Length: 244
Length: 247
Image 1 (tube, each protein chain N blue to C red):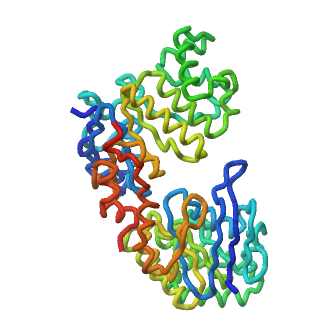
Image 2 (tube, rainbow over the protein chains, first blue to last red; image 1 turned 45 degrees about the horizontal axis):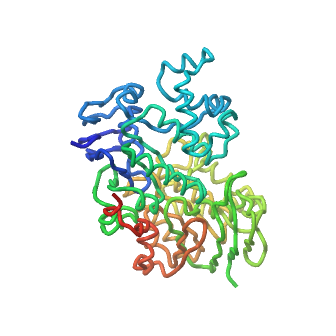
């Protein structure tokens, strides 16, 4: 049984079918990439998995449990982590505080009360060190560079020990040196047993990191296979180049 | 001499990194060009930089022998370069005709503006039918026709069009492509970005392939997709150790 099973998911917006009977699996322990040209439905598929939007029909199971249509914080408790953009409000908080805010709801209360449990703090510092930004722990998050924010988002999603991590464009807009660090850290966390589902446009990253690649076009899954097979498949190139 | 010459141009947004790292290309008068390349290649950024919406951080852009790099957008327009961005910005609460009048503001001659509108209504009969309709009430395809017609008001020597088929149904896209093909047949110089690469190449003579902010190669539009480098660009290079061997 796959860790994540997406079955016949449909999501429409007005007359537009953003996701059209999409089915795919994410195997436990894998790094799986979700790719496809602009407008293929990748982000909508992502949003249905993490509970940001409710699919019109179809089902989503995480570890065998039906999570279709659940609230996103409930899905988080079921072991799914996703990155969040750092908003302006969170930008005024320190990097360390951001690490705790993004975890479980009851820690927000302890944070507002001015406390952070010693365990939470230690874990947060360990993760910040893991991504290489622990020296910035007490800086306001808004002072971070774009790339450092990406690292903070990645570290904070690991606070809740997710079984499955959804990453939306981890390589987007980061310089080559930082990209190398991000890829290295994803692989390291994956070796420790965490499963990843990644939406990414940088194909070199996709082909290097992933064990399995899901290709979407026009809202449908047209293929799920190894990077090598996907790279060689004419249907995939055609999806990117359009139809005449 | 080429009509448009882009030499070693670097550009980016705000204090962010360079999106264009080093772009050089030449556009000859009377030909049509399609810029292709994967997401993030810098295609739209290149057009914005030529149009004056972004100041180049380095390099030169010359149009008809005159340096236009870093000029204000209206000055670039005056030089004869017009840009149709992908967001289809119309004046929503103005009529179709009023939108066209706005497009002709540089002409500063009422008679010429009227003559241009008549000419464009001949070429875009759908717009003529909707002349007194508010622009915001039109379909996406009609709005795309309107932004293109508005750009043509000043009789540009170069028209740059970013993703004209974005969000349009296939049948409507085809109408838009036919209109662009009509422009090229009239001898207008066209520089196009199109998500449907095959469609874009069908109406172009020549293709520029952009990747990671630089022009990788170029070639005849009807042959470029046979180049094996295209597959690597769109689908990435496999790691030395393949995915299957990584565990």
